[in-house]
Image 1 (cartoon, one colour):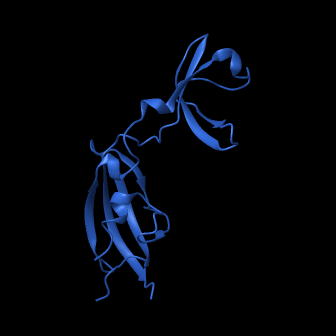
Image 2 (cartoon, rainbow, N blue to C red; image 1 turned 180 degrees about the horizontal axis):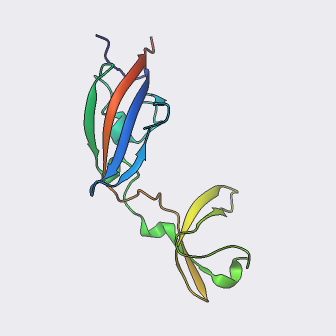
Length: 145
């Protein structure tokens, strides 16, 4: 039976949950996720769990935050004077916005606090600092060689 090795392209079905069991993402009802193993196309902790699997194999993978989206970085929060944000931009807590760096890079941010004078924006990935669990099933393998 063929087993996955680095460089192979695979298709997996998955359900990702937080430590409290909350589902944050799933391929249920969608096409399987396709990626090249070992190419850095998915989070490292999940990528490392795929080699050695065969079509039809199922497993549960626990991925610590440092092998997922990293720890929550307080330096990725920024306080912006409310006067610097145009009136037509909503600043309710939870609103997703985009910022542009001086180099022109667009960064997604979330409003985490706001009052009349200041708005606090967080550029951390929404799953930063979270340990994740994935239930996966290998659907297909396309060998690299």
